[in-house]
Length: 113
Length: 111
Image (cartoon, rainbow over all chains, first blue to last red; front, side):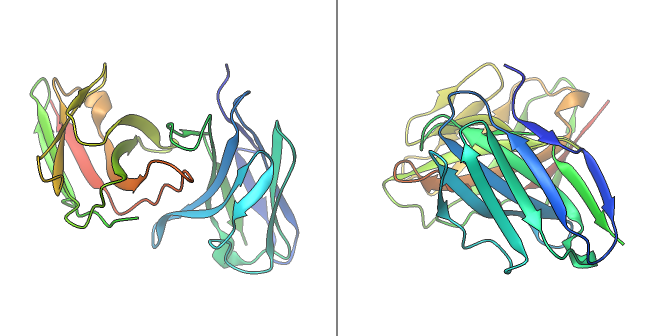
């Protein structure tokens, strides 16, 4: 398996623009997680899904952020409108069950100017 | 999930064992201890986890004290590629896989 695949690897956008980050989890994994990492706040869990259903979105910073999982092999994290403070590395991870290890993607480095 | 306390940083000599401590004094009976590491510019990587027994795999060993209030991750023969931030996490084993990361320990393996 190729592991968790995220795209794009790097994204530079202007403030106010819409940004969509994409994730393909490992096949057969029922859980999918979105994390954000910054120097100031470290790794923060934004939201996670079980069988394509959002379970906990308490980490989503505000209404500008939204996440979807239309099927078992694809998820998106959208920021609209984007702001400079959204600049961070966004990681997607997946796990097979609720108590097995999570595998992380390589991340998307987002820069909002 | 219970909070963990780790040293901010530590150095280790290449080829020697690296012992990474973690304090989790408020851990509950149904919480597991997980270790992940993050090499620069990469996503976190799972290392090992345990409940109360010591565990060993191809990457590391995990020693959990009898009262479960602390644990130690042991990298038996550290290499330069083991330079990374190591995270100790405690979480409930069932009913959700919410991994909450703290600050971790920045480990520098020196030649």
